[in-house]
Image (cartoon, rainbow, N blue to C red; front, side, top):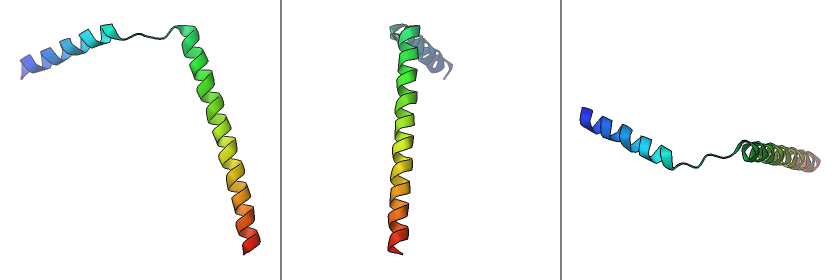
Length: 60
């Protein structure tokens, strides 16, 4: 059991060495894109919900 755990830890270390980490500027740009897209989706969902609610209220 202990041998399997140690092998797993070693495998994780080997794989982590293969990871290509983003540069700081790339990370900042990606974060900005995620925040902007999230904001746009929020606005879209809010407007869609408002319009559908008004239509439903008009029908009742």
